[in-house]
Image (cartoon, rainbow, N blue to C red; front, top):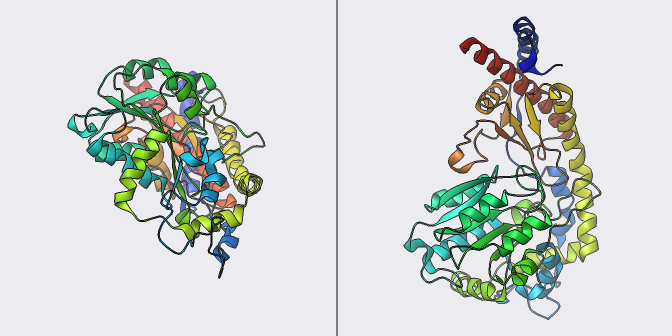
Length: 428
């Protein structure tokens, strides 16, 4: 198909008629498919079913002899910290093991910073109106945390190698800018991987706030979709080398590795930041679920076991991502209706539809029985200035459902682009 913008009026009208007829036929199928959230599918959760038998009767002692049924070991079992430290890029003694939600750990860090400040603060962040740098498109739950606590959000575009660092460095010079959200590997939703140069500049840049923090969400550190396992430069090492050892707060979890509702979450950082975090945690809890920590250690065993387990996830997920790519390539390549990512990992496919059509695409999909993440979700305050970005989540539905849904999504994107072009010509 020629680019939509290059078609003569008669050709555009004819194309609209044929695509509209296809859409009406698709809608008449009465489907009900959900592509809204990046949840693991049941067969992914089944990969960890063996965990449900662990740690087992009388198998509740750690390597150091601690009874995991009891209080204590606030930082987490040493063997659990050692197992996941490489995933976080931190020494085991600089890792804290929490309960299942890394989002909860991020929430606590932000609230504590607002109330107490962080190492290097002269006053609590909440004494002023702080701002965060937010790469876009980005993760809606990061933005929701900022919105919840009145933190101003300053958008910077992604480049294919991470955020636009010229824009980041300019914004970071403002003393009111206290932090920045980062998803460094297989970013949500674009799937891109931060380059070594991006990591170096983030670690070394001059900031107006001496207590500036990178909130480094390593959510997809081992979530590869190809045999290539991308690596990102170590942010703790880069910050230390640049003379900013306390700059990075690192977060991660096993929620998309083992059992989503019963995983482990992690915080890792410099010794000073860990001491700050532990002082707050000491007032909050007497200890996390150490039996669950033992389950993870007994099940995964070591780094080789973790990689084998993630290969099982890849075998289930890669065909779903390939099905989306086939549908988009088949219906949209060469049309100018959209551009989209082909990620090597993560949980999402980022897509930019024709400007001014994302909301229409979501509405068309809904009418056809396809639930998509709301347009604008990947921007602060859900306000995408171009009304173009969409986040596709192919992980949870079955492969058969993903295949059908992808065909319908591509059709909705194409129809919206054609109708947008027709409207623009009518208004000219």
